[in-house]
Image (cartoon, rainbow, N blue to C red; front, top):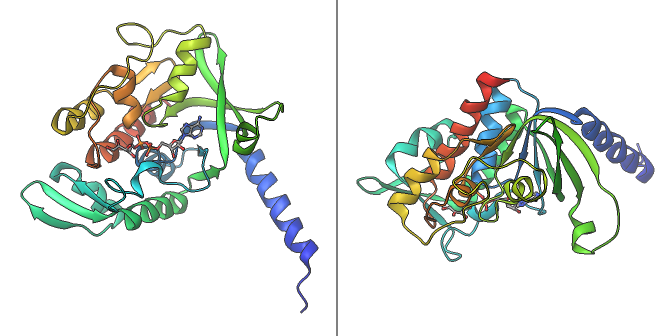
Amino acid sequence: MKLDEVIISEIIIKEYSRKLIRNLDLDVGIVGGGPAGLVAGYYLAQKGFKVALFERKLSIGGGMWGGGMMFNIIVVQENALPILQEFNINYHKYQDNYYWANAVEAVSTLTSKACQAGLEIFNLITVEDIMVDQNRVSGLVLNWSVVEMGKLHIDPLTIKTRYVIDATGHPSEVSRIVAGKSGISLDTEEGIVSGEKSMNAEEGEHFVVDQTREVAPGLCVAGMCACAVSGGPRMGPIFGGMFLSGKKAAELIIPKL
Ligand code: 48F
């Protein structure tokens, strides 16, 4: 049978529109498709929650593709190995407590397993604002990333959420929006994003997991964003803390849904 280009277009337009409509009212909206957001999305989707992840860029994976300084290897410490095992990502021992994995395999496998668990991923979409209802974060305001890049004056669309996970990494964008314009103070010393500190892998890897928490009603932080919000150090290309933080974010939210 001859392929019809218009049917191909129709499938894409109809099915994407259906997917968008299905996700207008979410249990959890995750902002950012780095390791923390992907792991959180996997564990939430696996439990059957309605969860979608919005990523500004074309590719999912955030800062993991490039390992350290574009050497595309990631380092993972012992306590995070169960997550690599859960996803079936190959890893190798270097010495006690230091394991390494292929960054490309890690990103692609996390992404694939999260999609198969039921996480809906929307790439090329930027979260530019939040919705607030009775002093609680209650939704996400979305626009195409190219609208932001082109500085086009085009209004966004909005979705409802019961919980938002800010997994936007170093810039902690959603938390900054909440602190800056929603009238809600963050649960930090200053009520705003404290700001990330200089590199310290040992401290940072503990801090990121400890500080994965609900920092405002309806808003949980995960990954590097948790360090930035609560004023902890960065840790560079060791990723166990990112994986454990994503898992903890899911585990914190699940009983509240
Ligand atoms: O930066 P990113 O990988 O965050 P993460 O999951 O992991 C951090 C590590 O990669 C690394 C590190 C490890 O030691 O320090 O940096 O905490 O992924 C964050 C993703 O969020 C997207 C951004 O494009 C990136 O892919 N993002 C940021 N702001 C927005 C956004 C936004 N407003 N809307 C949509 N996506």
